[in-house]
Length: 254
Image (cartoon, rainbow, N blue to C red; front, side, top):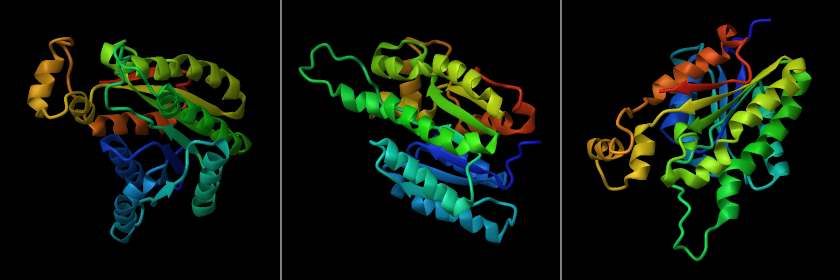
């Protein structure tokens, strides 16, 4: 059976930022119903309402919803996904978009580093959400899971040391999970994202885009900015029938 986006339900697990805004816009434009689930999802309520209003003009557009939940416990996350099912009738795709755009260095001079918070935000919530979503997808005998990760987590950049420790393991995790769930006609992949403007400005606070890019290129001469629309288009391809054979892969989007 072809896996098309129209009348599918997609969960985006992560905060509202330029990437998730682009995903919400692009996926609802393809006819999917999309729910953004996060502890601060109320920040996305107006944006989601505007996307849903597009259905008055374009009847084939999907709906969008923002679902606020405490992501610190498994039961809360599972309950939030249950609310998505109640609103839209099911879940077909899970996109983990827990992207950290600010530096996470290991500060040798700091007396205290809140490792629990950093690990929770960058890894633990992702694993809990995965465990919760599998319960919804497995019984449907189909589905897609995609993890978004900043490429910086793979590049071992000093300013992203803790993010690297937490997120780079998603590649091996994805490869293992893909084998585990393939009998249920599910695919699991990673999109490794190039540097967005939001990521760049988060690392060079107070600088303009051009100044920040010049400074970043001192360490990474070939760096270039990745537009959120490119990320959305790559994801749409991965979720389309053409991407059905892609499983257990880490795909770079630059």
